[in-house]
Image (cartoon, rainbow, N blue to C red; front, top):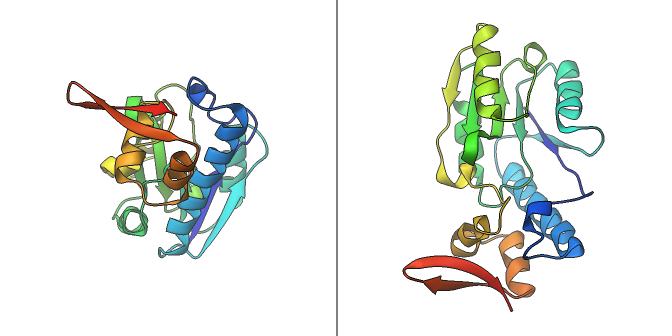
Length: 192
């Protein structure tokens, strides 16, 4: 069983620019990737490949066309994911398992027969992937998990990482002075 992780350093996490500098965003992206790889290594997935070339759809579709074994496509900005989440996703009884992200995105896809599928991460990719699977006559299971749905795109997403995170991405944020502050019962992030 294989995992593929699309990863780009260029313009990494640009929506975090109100809080993090460009170099901090690159380091943060690398730390999140480390957390995802650590979770994969401690799961039932026995090999992984990091895709660094091409656009998101091109890179993934190029990879899954040549893969003949069950494959997990997982985003690199899921620092809260744990091995148990990965094991649950890949053991679900369906041709396609979709782990949705916030706002209609897709954070993970497990494909029993990857060469029969094509990804489309434009716009509301969760709906795109649901439609692609159904059009191909593939069974679908939706994996619902707070930790897997929590990707790190906006400054407010970092709240969850600082509260729940135990990996290198959370440690990195603390090292560079990103902390929680509380206002009217809500947590927000600030940088010292």
